[in-house]
Length: 183
Image (tube, rainbow, N blue to C red; front, side):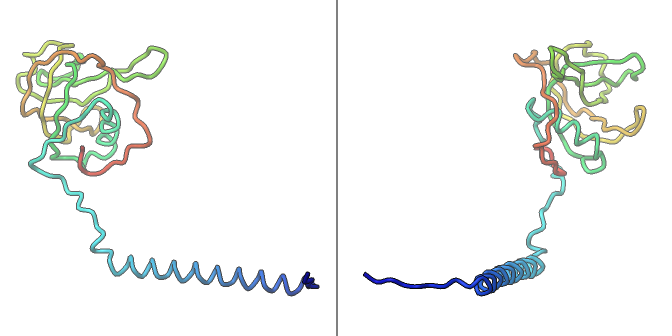
């Protein structure tokens, strides 16, 4: 049997712990400086091309409808020229022009209550479509004015469709990551 008699000196333990902490701090600082330098060297390669594709039509699905609606309303200029396609029902207010309607959906807000939400649309023959009739549109986002600057969808094509099984859309959420391209 071997017995060791080890005396631990508080000053020695403190110095050893301090030395280890200094080494860890220096290592973290060196790694951080390396990452910053590496980023600066490659920053032009890391840029994302978020230009709006002129030929692509983004299809808006019910799951992300309100997220996209919110983002486009908050940052209209970024989305001007983006072509989109989605369905909804024709909704009109008394002060709309003859060529205007909202392509609407009902947004669930809880307790079996909904709000009407949608994009204001412009279409020369808008009166051909009855209020509350369901349509599918393809159009281009433009900037217009209705009680302030808002996006207006200039309709390129429109066709009647049937009401989907689940016609309502969810509240916008914080998980949506906006870009300048709607997908």
